[in-house]
Length: 109
Length: 238
Image (cartoon, rainbow over all chains, first blue to last red; front, side, top):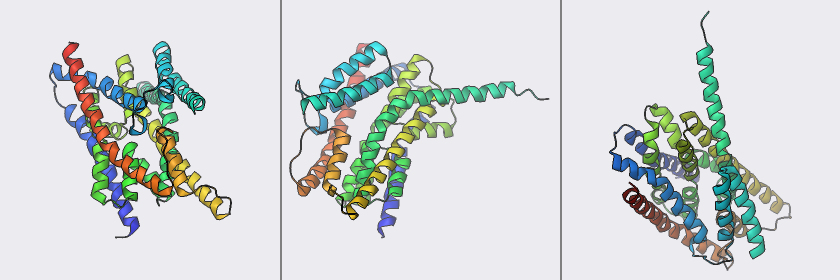
């Protein structure tokens, strides 16, 4: 097989596999009448998944725990969370978080 | 003369909802651009052309899954290993899709497919939050997905272009970065500078390989932790 052919096969299969984990749950579950306990459980999924993702990124950057007072991730995450809490602005919190992380990294390095 | 005011109003309303989704998704664009640039640099460094890197980003929109695929391809893993790894990394989208689906009842299969294609961690967070505020519609969700897609693909294009210009500067005798340094830049942009890594080119390749392998179980734990936390929440807060 030529490299271009291999590339095309991989990219096509990646596209199909990524769509295959995204679309079927939406297509199937949206056509079902779900019981109330399952709906309640699904209601907690966003907070649970986002909490797990953010905690992993902040406390374990790069796959290794970095829980110290001088971690730039923690130094940026705490005020960013407070900014979102008080402003309820996703854009404001995102921009603040990016600036705070750059500042924290410069101060700690 | 037919009265088109109603349909005109509907089109305007859909357009304004789509535009609102784009505004909501702007923070996602800001986040995706630098990571997309890192992907573009890394992809072209291991041998993708700029077009190939962009097509990959445009059709997969898979973030971490794409980085892992690159690592495995660089290590000469077979096609099915690459595809299996990206699929496993993205299994959390099954949960996301199931969570969103009650809000997408009555929507056509085509529209559902479009929203599914742009389902990522960030679009999910924005759309769920917007849905809870009561303003979310299919058009606004499409706007969020569209701006996220643009950010990811544009970032990849910029990264590929940066790499291309860097190659030209090397060819002209002004190059100062070796391939591994570009990898390190990409990794730092993607993951931040901590923990610091040591070693030269060999160490860099070993680190990337072990990172690709260690990423999968970490993501599995995220899924397990999420299912556990959601169950606890559903039991405790009836």
